[in-house]
Image (cartoon, rainbow, N blue to C red; front, side):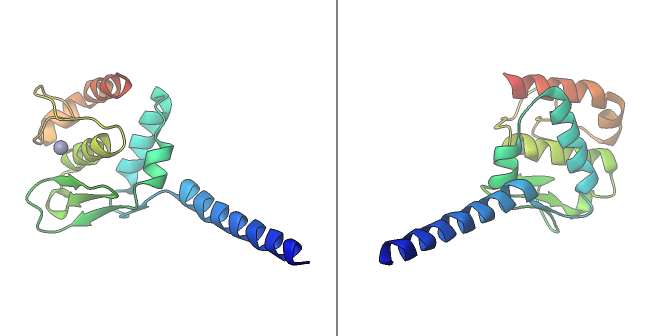
Amino acid sequence: MKRFIQFILITVMVAGASWVFWQDYTSGPGVDHRLVKYVNEWKQDMDSAGISYNRIFNLRLDTIEVVGGLNAYGYCYTNHIEISEGILGSEWVTRQAVYHELGHHVLSLDHVDDKCIMFEKSLGEDFCRDNWNSLVSKYINRAKE
Ligand SMILES: [Zn+2]
């Protein structure tokens, strides 16, 4: 009887841990509602390029949040990403910042010297809007290297 109870307890614990893990794996990070559309676009772009991001995106990343008073457009930490509130009015600058920080966090991309999404500074609203498709292609090629 004692062994049976041990068996039941271990089974319940394993099932519980698996459930928590599965919830985390399938639900992904909490994303500020103002950033959801950019994050979804990024996921679609990664999906169509065949780049797998689920493991890091869903498990390691807890939140993608909007923060006021940042000295940069965005920051990337071990388990969360911050995007500056001050840029939300500029759609393409925000889009670059979201792709940029996800590039650091999920795809392990470093900064580059040429005009790319991983350039250290913002490329500006007009440049991003006018060149977005080629910027995303470059970004995807780097992620595949
Ligand atoms: Zn950066």
